[in-house]
Amino acid sequence: MSVIQSITGLIGLAMQCSKLVSKSLLIAAVALIVLAALVVPASAAELTVGTDGQYKTIQQAVNAATSGDTIRVAPGTYAENVVVDKSLTITAASGQPIVQAANSGADVFLITSSGVHIDGLKITGGASGVHIQQTSKCAVTNIVARDNKRAVYFSYSTNNKVSDSDLANNGYGVYSDYSSNNTIASNVATGETGADNALGDGIFLNYGDSNAVTHNNLSANHVYGISLYHSPRNIISNNSISNNEQIGVRLGEESNNNTLTFNTISSNKDLGILILKATGNKIYLNNFVSQSDAIRDASAAILNSPEKLVYTFNGVEHTSYMSNFYSDYTGTDANGAGIGSAPSAYGDKFPLMKSVASYGTIIPVSAVTPTPSPQSENSTTVSENQSISETQVLGLSAIFLVAIFAVVGLAIAFFILRRSPPSE
Image 1 (spheres, rainbow, N blue to C red):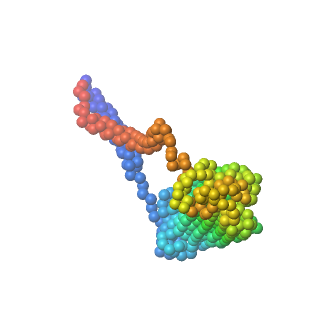
Image 2 (image 1 turned 30 degrees about the vertical axis):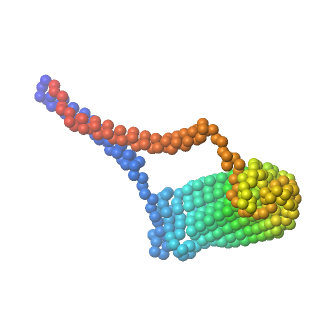
Image 3 (image 1 turned 60 degrees about the vertical axis):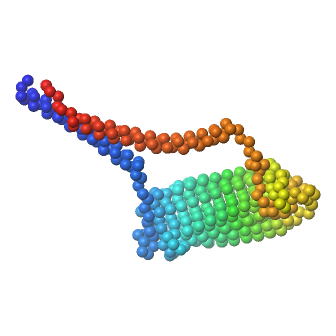
């Protein structure tokens, strides 16, 4: 072989080795970058709004933010209508900043992204204080909403929550359209006056399924404390529904199979609960106080607990079906168990002699003596563990595979660099 051929061969081999090394190193580098991205997630940023903040308006901060960021609003008054189209937390830095609608015909906050949290602001003067539109997993907490047509408006939205907020003195406290599986808890929705010749309710559920309405004050509203229309399977519990100008609770057309328990429904001008073309509603363990009529069309409802309950009355434990307490019930308690011996005027056979709080902790019999089979318990445990384990395995597998690619790439590069050129 000539010298020229030998040199040419060595050059070709070197080029092949160089290409292999380059490819191997490239694979290793890419793998390591991906691995780093998986292991070290980017941290969320905090943006400030106010006179001394990074931004002068909330909308400017929203536009500049990235999903996952927190916007802290300094005390002051901000005249704007804010559109939130990414997952953000917008909260008061201190005190209670006021966000007032620049355009009263538009929402003060319009939320169109999932995972938004509005907290600690006073929100006034808009079509809605907060409008959650066609989205999910949003939260509204610790706000004060005043002089809006609707303090909080759900439209075509699911799995959201409004809680611990003062929603008094608007047209409606919470107005819900075609929205399901939302939670409305521990709010004050009083003094609602209606808007645009509409009714004024603490809460209105329109075509809403499986919502939870709990621990709210829904009193002194223009028409209803809470009104349902075509809204089935909702849970309405532990609310104070009093002194409304007409009716405490309206279960309107096709609002079937709702459950009302542990509510105090008192001193509403016309009556406590009105049932209109609705069936299967379970109404028990409520207090009806100082009303001319507690329930109208009670025959369409189920007024007794679906199973026997364990309770304590006058220091003695008892087991019985239970209904509601009516302050105008005139029956007697023959056996001292706290249950009236005669049916109430509404037909329920187990009326309470005293308010629900007089019966201690009330527990279903099935909860006191559960009898799940060992197999079902094990199945539940396995299912839960499997869910956790699958999530962990998926995450760890991805990282493990990337790590393998990185190691293999580096090994190939090291092997080629260490390898002597072949002899002729």
